[in-house]
Picture 1 (cartoon, rainbow, N blue to C red):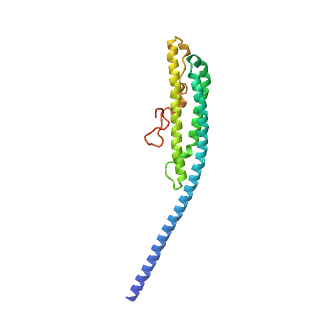
Picture 2 (picture 1 turned 30 degrees about the horizontal axis):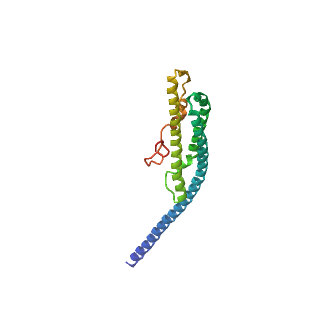
Picture 3 (picture 1 turned 30 degrees about the vertical axis):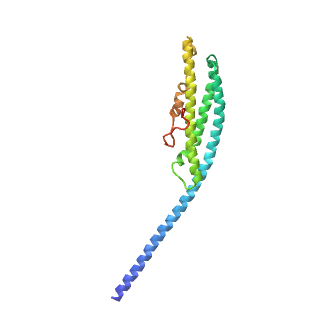
Length: 202
């Protein structure tokens, strides 16, 4: 009987050591995984911050370019009679505008991939929020600007038809660039908040 108690006691001690070992291993693995996750998050957060700075720098350059372009558009559309000559000058600038928007979209690809979750580093979350806001505004403002220029071309074309000079009808920018314009021809709501930042009349 005594031997049975000894065996049972030995078995229980061995089992407790085994359970303790398993629990220690699980807890230790959890701590290691947590440290690795925090480390990985820190690396991603740093990259988000760095990429955002490049993205934002391109945004600022675009804003300066756009201000100058709006002056050119105003000058281009001020007098119908001058629009055919101005058209040859304005189209390359519209193409450059589109290229700059595409550069910004391309520069933000990493942010698009990584800003789908929240991070323990608050600065990274702030940069992701700013990325969604600024890119949404950039694309929507571009689309609005194209609507403005095409509206002015429409007005000119209506006038030129009335003047019986249909040979001088101008193509709208989107019609001129149909293939390349497909990704920027609808307003976007990137952060899915129900608003379209930068959209005309909003």
